[in-house]
Structure formats: C-alpha cells, structure tokens
Image (tube, rainbow, N blue to C red; front, top):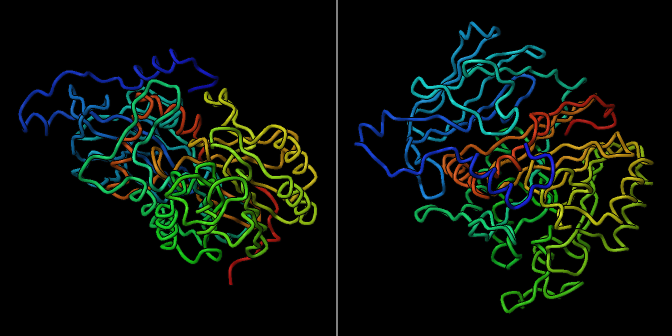
Length: 474
C-alpha cells in the first residue's frame, strides 16, 4: 500500500516488486502452454450485503508480453468457499477458456464471515500486491471476508457514479516527468476508451442504476469529435439531463488550435467544444431527483493548461455556497471532477491532484453548516479512496477509479430511507476485462497499488443515515 509520496526511485522499486514474473523467452509447445498456467492478481473487488465479486488473471509462466507481465493463458476459474476455513464446500465457476476471470458469489448472508480460495486448473490464485486486495489472508492460499449488513430502511433507487472516460485517448499511463512508457491498445481491438464507455453503460444498467453521474474528463482533450462520441455513448444509458448528468474535468477545458475553431469561444480561453456539446450556457447546475438534491460542479472554471489545481470561478463559488444554505437540510450529493483533498496521493506534490486549497477549505466549512450534504463524488485521481472530510464529519468524499483503465469501472450508490451503500464494480465485458488487465501494467506495474484502493472499505461501504426525505421513483 502506498501511504505517502514515494520518490521516483521508490516507484521503480515498487514496479519491480509488482511485476514479479520472469522475463525469460517463451518456451515449450502449445500443449505446455495449455497446462502451464499461473493464476495471479486476485482481487475482492465488490462486497455487498448479499454478494462478492472476484477477479484474477491466468498467464503462462516464464513469458513476457512486452509489458512486464505473463502472456495470457486461457484456463478455467472457480471460487470454492464456505463458512469455515477447513470446509470450503461450495463452488461457483466462472467462464472457462479465458485468462480474465470474473466470478460473482450471490446469496451471501449479512454479517457472516466466509472463507474462500480462487483456483484455475487446480492452482490457487495469488493476490495483487496491495494490502487486503483479496480480503484477509489466512494460510494455504485461503482468504476471508465478512459480509456487511444492508443500510437501514427501504431501498429507493441507485445511481452510478463514474469519471475519467477520456474519449479520444490513445495511450494510457503517461505521467509527466516520470520514466514510464505508456500503454496502447493491441492493434486488432477498438479504441479502449470506447470499449470501456460501452461497458460502463451496459453494466450500470445491468446493476440497476436509475441515474448516472459522470464527474469529468469525459474526453481526452475536448476535440469536437471526441465530446460528440462521448455523448453518443452516454446516450445509450438514457436521456441527457434526465437520466444522466455530466460535469467538466480539466481535460474537458476550452482549447486553442485549428481543430477547435468550429466551437464557440470559451469563457477563459480558446474554444469550448465541451460546453457546446453538453451545456447551453452555465456549466454548473442542480437537479432534484425524488427529494435528493444533486449539485454538479465545474472544477475547471478557470484559465489554464489543465495540469494545475482545480478551481471554481468567483461566480460559481458564490452560487454554490448560496445553494448549500438554501438546501442545508435536504439530502444532498455533490459531484465534480477534482477532489477537495487527495490524502496519501503520491502525485500530490505536483499540486494538480485536487481543488485549490484556498477553495477546498471554505467548501468544507460550508458543508459543516449544511447537514443535508452526505456525499462528495470526485474523479481525477483515477483511484478508489474514501475520506471523511475534516470539520464536516457527516460528509464522505468518494474518489472513484477511472472508467477508461484499470481498475476500470464505476461505483453504484444504492439509496435507502435509512442510509446508503456504495460499491465499486469493474466492467465485465470480454474486451473490457482484457483492457483492464493490460492497463494494470501502467507505471511499470505499480498502478494497482495506487488505484485499486488501500482497503476493501475504500471501494465498498455502508452508512446509516436518515435519508427519509428521498422518495422512490414513480
């Protein structure tokens, strides 16, 4: 687990540890390829009050696919589990013949501890090198987890929270100033942002989301074709401004250049193709969904090149603070691209991982006076991280992993009259799982340590809270 700001040398060391595979040339026959399988990268991704989802990868030992990982080796996959560590008497099998394993257990009992092993071709999967990635480790390749209790009260509806689609991007994992090569899609596959956006829409609907909030960096650099394509893909979820809503990220800012000249002039600079596609004028807004107050922020409402801290204009800040005062007691969810804080983010030294501190502090002070606010959803860091905001302990800030790359998914907010549950789901389509596993090799393989979440509770949580002011959809 990354708990502080590592040096460049430390990042390189973490990379070597995380890869953990031989770089020897490929040896053996096709028959040897089929029998020599090593299951790795086991993760307990999602843990609800009735279900658990596990993913892992099977590769061919002694090979290198050019990214520092084993070449993919299709195999079977199963989870054996039970309520005692010495009696794993239940089995759930995944899709056979894939290297990208995704197994979901259902019918679990709230409050109960389960023990399990993940296996492929009889071999036990080893976890991703992140503390607690697969649950609590025991001996002999067995892990345990305890199923949470559901939120109190009656279930009302669900909202998918997502961010960082980056439509138009062609190389993932480029971080300025760090000596790591980016990762591109394999030649015979569609562009990875489109694969992941399509999978997002399909899975959010499959998981029962009634609404979707996309918190910025919808595009790679806000080119007209990319923001148009993004909207077209999101329209697959439902009607814009009725079923789904978007906020601007730093990549969605107004740009200069000939490709942008068909778009309207930006407020701060260049031409604003993102605003033209998604907004009639003002780029921040509120909506009420069955008593739930939604506030969408534009956290790059300023001039700049995108690499600095986020910021709200004076006009937007005054509007936001006034809205919080007006709706101080109403259940409220705020979403925007930049987090207010980014604790333990090794890239925070750049100053561009969160909102400008001069604005984050007064926003948290305003939250303290607005007891109805319960959740602030942010992206930008491309990681899962849950933080209780200082000074306003009734508000949780949830950073959600990027759609467009590992861990590749969204968080599902399930609202009850007496609280809420928040669970991260990896997208599960075949091409989505393939790209997610390929892109985990970003930053030389250390990326999971920065993005998966330092604890299962950073991607799965249950909170008891009075949300009785919210009603069910008609």
